[in-house]
Length: 231
Image (cartoon, rainbow, N blue to C red; front, top):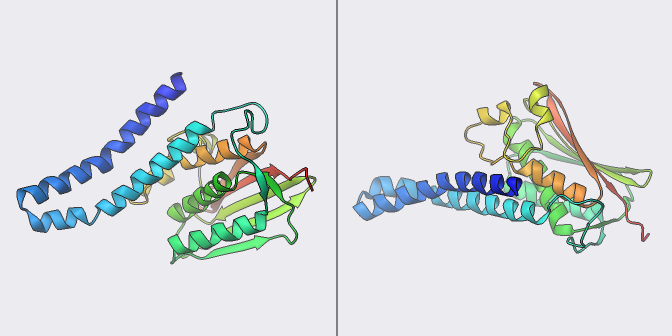
């Protein structure tokens, strides 16, 4: 109950800023200040995108309450998923959203299928890719890798960004936590919920996620998922 109350308070706080900017734009338009109103209205699309992302992540986060065991309660609607197709599709969506960024995709041939929720797993991968794009220099490539061994599929998203120092790295998956490097990117957006959602998605699939980072050299997010037992 305490965790839910904290989540509600944090989401309410994050909603205020874009809503306040929308209100200012509307007030300026109503007052007849067309020049300033036009400038403010131009940012409403960005504000709406922020709200949409926050609400989507929050709903997914709330849906995936911490559980014991894989897909406890049968909430995920699992299906057979080809990870190569899922990752290639995620890469395509990332490139469309970040046309100036270089994404290198390295997939091991003949990856085994997963028993997964395609939508949630795609959201988790895109969150990791977006996170890398926000904080790594625009000229540096981002790498998406996948391989399998011993009944597990390993996916990695690696960047050459500022990295995360030790104290912040230990808190990387906490709800609404943003590292000092992330906070220094004042224009990069984000609410600090993406990595927490990724962890919940991965754990609900019976997997695990971990962060490896070296300050000023980059960060690698690595997740491991059990392969399908139906093969």
